[in-house]
Image (cartoon, rainbow, N blue to C red; front, side):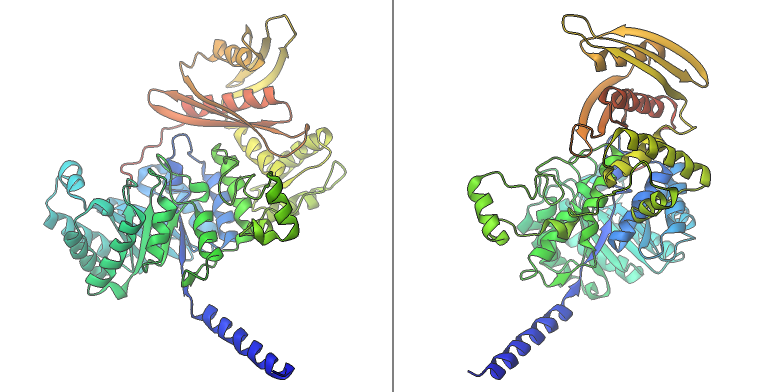
Length: 534
């Protein structure tokens, strides 16, 4: 065969490949980190933190951002309102039960959104209808129709979820879904609320629903899977292969109980196996690791080292045979490139001689904006102090610095003034601490099993919080002995659980910061209660 013929065959193959790519359907990525993710015990976020994450999700090119549950509290309403006012590229969504007050509150919170969606739901499984709602099936259908129609008064983008669909009767599911589509729902979400389904079973459910419901072609079918049996991603992908074209997921798989389907695993599963899936996402995968670290940093939920895609060991090879294979050809043991998900992110090379403009520019790239020059100046002074301690400053250091600054804002009633610890071989570790409580300084001294234990006891001798320490976790933010230590402390009091975070190049100081941050949340913050969870 001549070279010209070879070229024509090659061009034909390339054109066919391009045609195939163009013909792929879009898989909508619906991120619920700010709503369902926040329902993880202790993972509540402030309004400003939600805005930071929302901006990062927008940069990731997430299609839908579920910003919260507006009726749950005034704080949640204001958070949804704040996200709606700053996000322009993604659709902002608010959750609402099938109740007039919920839907009206969501509609009000979303007024400023460039593109909005109301997501309303009601339980459809026999156990939920009987035990929780105490409603007959006919009443549930009537309530669902009414809710969708009311939501349509605020936006033509309405999503309906039959809660606990995975345990609902198929005939009733078909009935209520057909009715809500007719009422104006453009997205139908099928939640496996308790993580009960198996992949083949759940995929088959989506296929049957789409085939049996007469007007199924009038709506996008979506799934929302929980990870109670470790099958959230598997169930979601099984649904996608059976026609679902929206997946509800969270960064790092964050969520109540065992969590939700992990966004990064869904996206990279579809991308890596584009030979299997007839759809593709709009996600900028190079932003995945940045989002993962931001969410981990803000919520205090560390990412396990062997976590798929975003774990620090996800692209590490220790076995000799693996190392040899990767050196010869990366594809022997790697099905994804580390840089494709953001592991090759730029390092910040600014130092103590760098100016404010360069500092501000890099934070802008990381999605961090300051409300005033005073806030910028405060963050910049903290950056200078950190630069004096560390030779190299990484993006992760900056994210921790901004989070730490917000944790120690003027609104914090308990503040660390000074800390002195002593640890000597053969002697009992001790700690002397000075705290400011509403501007009044108090001092304490305590001994303990170690300097952290002694410091926590010194704090408690002043505060007397009567809390239970459930978790103490330490992670290094970057590599090296001069790395900042990031500490997470989980406290429980009267059933209320909070996470506290602290970061510092000194691990004892970081620990005390985290403990004080948790105390401020559990003793002085207004409790946030969700009226109902999906």
